Image 1: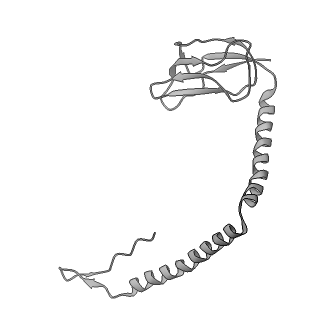
Image 2: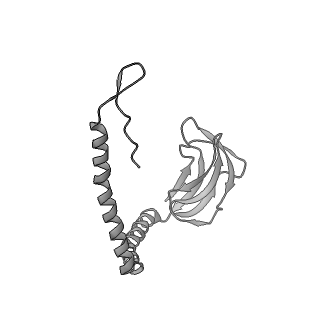
Image 3: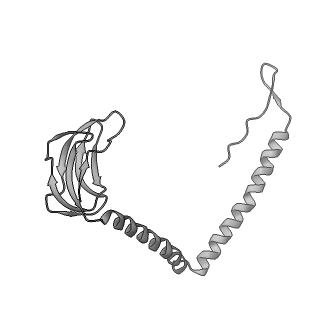
Length: 159
């Protein structure tokens, strides 16, 4: 089934642009979310990814063309790769998640882990000391200013 890829919404108050480059040609096989063109608006140059996987049967624009939101850019013969592309991306993401903990465990030596644990313990001990200092500061009597009004000391900034 042939599907037209049209100029998407390019942003707030942007309804047209100029084609800076066309990265594909008729007959090319593309993957879902592959960048196919660059379009320049009044604000920026943006790469346009095509959400459809398949074979390009028609390129409707060329470099320098002025286009508006909704104008056709490409006609793509859908090969059903849209769902496959999302499925492959999800599988790749799962593979990365599964491999990350192994990499951390393999690279961390027992000495490094002990140092990390000690640093966490030190940080936990410092927090109550800072809290006590702040409470003691708050209990101090208020100071009088030059105008005779009582003033509280400004609280100390926490790191």
